[in-house]
Every structure is written in structure tokens, then in C-alpha cells.
Length: 506
Image 1 (cartoon, rainbow, N blue to C red):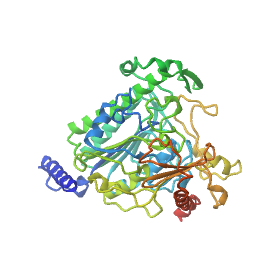
Image 2 (image 1 turned 90 degrees about the horizontal axis):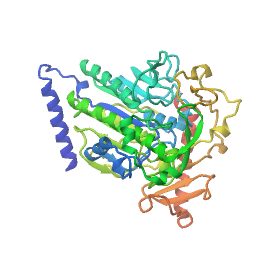
Image 3 (image 1 turned 90 degrees about the vertical axis):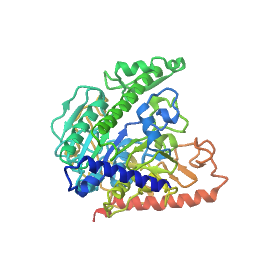
Image 4 (image 1 turned 30 degrees about the vertical axis):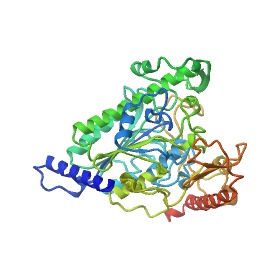
């Protein structure tokens, strides 16, 4: 029944759109394609939204989207850190397949992104905000333009208030204003121009918030003036906005600023939604928001019901908030289907009738979930932090000329004595049995296996249905389940390493 209602709703919306264009009887196929806006928060964990019950954070816009659209309650980032997840978001492939192992590891130029695909389908494509898959400068072979975006106003890494961004690879420029609103305003200008050209648009907005170091507008900071006194006695380590070096600060001060950033980001998403409504674009624009990894240590997990944090394979490291709003194609619903950032590309290809890249993909289309007709995945979800620092030494051969991997957009946090970021990616010549290590996990219909030699219990099995907080290790009780899932994980790793050798490009 839901499927029928959705089709009726979509048909009605499309007829409405056509009637608004009464003077233009010759509607091209491109006009019927859904417009697409993909949004991503930086270090925004699953708990840190009002609709998931956080005790302090105010996110009225995301809460409304979750109520009106499709709420993905078990949505995962493909990796517990940022650069790898962003690669998976664009390619539908696990980042280890192309050497994006950790923050400041670049993507490879041969990868096919969803922007490449949609640009070929006639979309106007643009990227705004954090990139973190290589430098955004004009001669970088992995800048947003090389990855299929017509325009970009982007940063090599993260950014704060008054961001310094590069427009289409040019010399970075400072833009005054709250960071989230600055890039949303730029996105709105791009959408307005695409509408004038009667062209469908594909826009990615990757916010710099709420990545530390934190800052906020007075109106947003004031919302969090009365956090519990207990937070004032705790101290956390994060970057100083003044020096760029690590410092310790009281948790209540840090959270006040972090939560203000989240609220400002939420408000900017509201500005986007209102714009789409006022321009008559909202019905046929798919807006998809998610985080890029779990909550970092500097947030101290004040609302955390999940185990672990950014960088870990537990739910708190890889489970993130995700909502999709598309009035013409989605009714209000909640999905508990395990889904992941690698599902973005297959889903959008499905919705726009575009062929998938001819290479191994790790994601699936979630289009059937829009109508409540997708309950299980055909194969498990796999996650893996490749031990790059062990495998690649000073003699490793760069995949890309190191000069092209030097970034130009400055940020607050100093690293290696500088305020810009350089990237890396290395040639991986052949598979070795020594290369299957590193923290990893696999999620099936009911169970999850976590393998991490740095933990007290190197192999753990959890029943996520009855134990979402991963408190009870069942590995000794159900060794046959562990063995089966370990074998599935190993086979998947072997496929990933085959891709890493470059075989997919031949």
C-alpha cells in the first residue's frame, strides 16, 4: 500500500511541476529527474540530534526532517574517520580499495564518482565545504573538478568561522560569516542558476561543523549557558583556536561551543529547505543528511547510548545520524535496515536510471527502502582500518606526485609544523597474508563481529538487536557464528586488496 501511495504522490508532484511550467510544453527528460542535495556533518555522532534523544542539543530542522522523511536509524559511515568515509560516499566503494586509509590520505584519480555519473546524465554539479580527499587547488588530480564537479568552493580539510576556501581551485579567499551558512549561501546561488537554466542539479555540501576546535555565534552559545554543573569538573583535550596546538579545557565550555556549532549547522539546513520551498523546488529535490563518523573524544559522549567513539569499530565510532527528505518520492517512515555511506552512489544511480560503474562496489541501492520494501541486505556490511603505517614505509612509491598532494587552504589546527595539509597515496604492488590486520568488523542481519587486537577481548560478537550498546560479548557462546562471519570478512578483505593493487583500472 505504501508503494502505491508513494507512486501517486510522486506522480501528483510531477504533474504539479509540469503545470507550473505551462508555457513550456516541451519538457525534457532531464526536467523529470530528481534534484539532489547531499549534506554531511563533520564528526557528528549518532546521538547528537534531538530526534535520537540527546539531553541538550537542539536540532529542530533535522528533527523535522526525521519526522517528515525517511529516518535511517542504523546508518553507518564506511570508516570511523573522515577522509575514508568521504571517498566511500562518492564512489560506492570501501576506501581501502583505492588507498584512502585515514585522514589526509587522498582518493585516486581513476575512481568514478557519483558526480561523474550525474554530470554525464545532464546534471549541474557542485561541491561546497570540506573536501579532504586531496588538495582542492587547480592542478590537483583529485580536486572536486577532477572528480566530476562543475564548480566548487572548498577546503582541503575542515574550517571554522570566516572560512578560507578555494573557488574552483584558485588562490584561497576568506569569506566572512558563520561557516555553515557561508557554504549554504553559495549552494543556494548555484541552485538558483541551475534553475534558471532549467537544469537538474546535484549539490554536495560538506560542513566544517562540528569538528573541533569549536566556536559559535552568541545567539547559539546562549542556548547552552546552563549545561549541567558536573561537566565543569571534567577536562578534555582539543585544539586551541589561538595557537592551533592541543590544550585542555573544561568540558562544559567545550560542549557549549560544540553544541552551538551543531545548532548553527542545523539552522543553515533550514535555510536550504525554506529556499527550496520558496523556489518551488522542494517536492522534487532529494535532501540527504548524514555524519561522517562517530563522536570524537572532545565531545565526551554526553548523550551517548552507544559504545565507542570516533576511530573505533564499535557503534559509537561508525553509526551516524541520517535522514532523507524527498516529498515527491518518500513518505514519512523509519528504517532499521543497516545502511552505509557506500549505498549513496548505487541509490542515486537507481533513482536516475544510470548504469553502475563496472568495478566492485560495496554499496547497494536503498531506493526500495523509500517505499518500505527493503528489509534485509544481500550481504553483510564490512568495515576495516587498514594498517597503513605498518605496510607503507619511507621507501613506498607515491601513487601521485607529492608536489600535487600539497594543500593550500589554511586551517586553525597545526600539524607537522604547518597550518595546511598535505596528502598521500601509495602504490600497493601485491597482496600479502600480512596485510589483513587492523581493526575491522562485520555486521550481518543480527550479529556483529569486532576484531581489534588493541582491545582486551580481541574478538567480540554482539547481538545488535538485543544489545545495541555492545555490552555482552557472545563469542565464546556462539563460536560457529564467529567463524562464519570471520570467513565472510576475510573474503571481502581479499577483494578489497585486489582492488588496491589497481586491478580495477586495467
